[in-house]
Image (cartoon, rainbow over all chains, first blue to last red; front, side):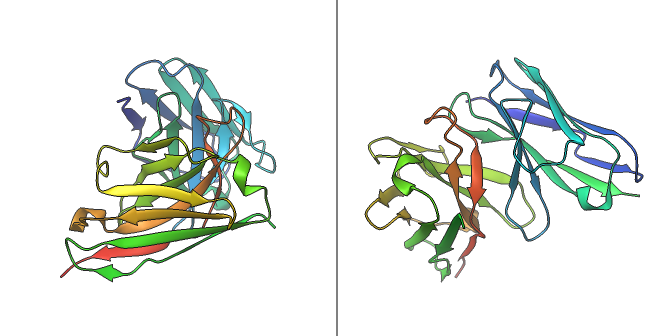
Length: 106
Length: 122
């Protein structure tokens, strides 16, 4: 099975900051990597698929990059509504989520 | 409106069985891969099981293989998860989700239900 790791597990940043979350796969997944945002008590929301393709309606402040085993999610100009937990997910070999990164606003 | 509505969650004793349902509306159900994802209290997301659009192909996480069974009734636009031999480790919110139809098989999940809570406890 492909294992996924994310770093950091928690990050605290100020409004207007740019933050980056890293996701690593235990073996290559090409660009079959998605990012989700989940707020407390709510279902996850798909933000990005195929490493860098932004879903319709998702703010352009979110961007994704990477291929192979290392990927990043970047949030530009951090807003209060971005406070959430972010999960990466590989879908190259079945499906597997990363452990999540909690983004807090200072 | 595209919607998924789960039901069937409950408090169940260890060793018991439960069947979850997910009613789909607002889209052509029979062309989409469908999935169950769970989230234990305070924990991350765990993929549980996926079924192809026709129902011919099914996939399971090792943690539920042999105990859970996914199925679908395309005539009723409904997805199911039969859960047997439940343990405390199965306690979670169970979400159904739709595959995004980019490749038609291995896809991420673009529509999610609100979830249904399963609690396994004596």
